[in-house]
Image (tube, rainbow, N blue to C red; front, side):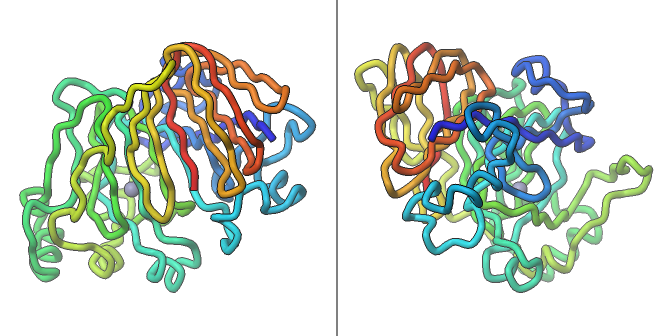
Length: 319
Ligand code: ZN
């Protein structure tokens, strides 16, 4: 089953306008901070744009057709496993941290949040925060939050198009202004805000900080993982492919198609394809959909072989 998805948008105060101007999305929101491109989360459901399920939410389609749509790797899961977003940060996001599964289930009643970022575009000199420069104690972390000096001990990283970051739950992080990225994450909306640059929310008040929970879950040390894709770019017939990450939560590739790309949605997992540049078309079991930048397609598990033709870049995610 080949489903084209209508994203949900968010107008968080740090957002920009590029999801409208560069990606052509139609929304009255201003700014547009996030597009939830593959989402069954209650805070922003995708709806289906094509075929017999047109107009239904993706969650409804899965409820009607059965969890087999997700594949055997999701057989034991009670929720949809991931959430994929496009994020346009015109300004800095708050410095934040997410809990792991055990803590989030116990305290928030939803999964934890490990996420990863693939940089699609950025301003010259744009940077983000990724963990700590060196190990510090929880006491020092608390003290530096309270006296506003903790930005001195965090790891500021300059970014470039094509960079990739794996943000394990517990890693302090912040996307900086001037960065446009694709985020693949666990299906959770739990964020503990540590620092918000002294900004006021839409209601004129500072947004709440969650210092105690952040202290509980933050690993106050440099990130364990290198901030780079896990694989090299591999040239194949008609396309190039790069493994960004593979872990127990998701497997993500960046694929640049010059003419055509052929693959299979097997029984183990659905396949998410998010178009980040260019245009073309996707075909699967006799059905064809036109594709352009910003389109998000869900191929259910066991859909069999599919082909993408055209000149385009995409992020492909499987479980
Ligand atoms: Zn985050």
